[in-house]
Image (cartoon, rainbow, N blue to C red):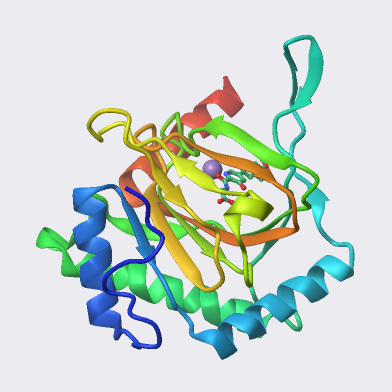
Length: 243
Ligand SMILES: COc1ccc2cc(-c3cnc(C(=O)NCC(=O)O)c(O)c3)ccc2c1
Ligand SMILES: [Mn+2]
């Protein structure tokens, strides 16, 4: 299944919060993956992109971890994105802050709307800061991985893409998810197109990779915590620290 264009994201049709939440709940329960297109609308989307470009031009992005591995003899870098963590309260980031609040509104409302107030049996009570990431092109990529393989508390990955006129055929940078619950070798191919919001379960159900990008590719990621799993992860961490 490829999530290029969802039936409900008819161009220009502004969805209200309730409708988006119903889509998110339905898709997360059915597929473990959900795409919402035209999330902010063109003007607000461009205002967020402008702030991200300003941050990038200030040179505040840091290289993501480079873990090199011997692939067929030559040294292969595992990831090539550059990142900066922001909480949105920084100066000249208030459009990014508005994006964060909008994503929070969808996640928290969806969490309340589902049966017994849980989406996918989670009780979401917090999230990480926003990770603004740039894959600088030149083939930068991220090998297949799981965001939360060991119950660190993160249950939902939310990624907002900022790439105007992105064409995967020439620019690459496709996000390919290999949902473990899907029949056969079906995959979810997500193009990182402008004003697209993506949700997927952060655990081992969704191994995923970022294929080599040949142009600068921007995204803003938020990871949402499940109260119980996060509390247990913190307890484990405290115990290790004192052992
Ligand atoms: C301990 O410090 C850090 C700092 C930053 C980290 C960033 C990631 C990460 C994970 N996933 C993706 C991804 O899947 N992107 C999909 C897409 O862009 O379409 C990505 O770009 C980045 C993982 C661990 C980190 C640890
Ligand atoms: Mn990831």
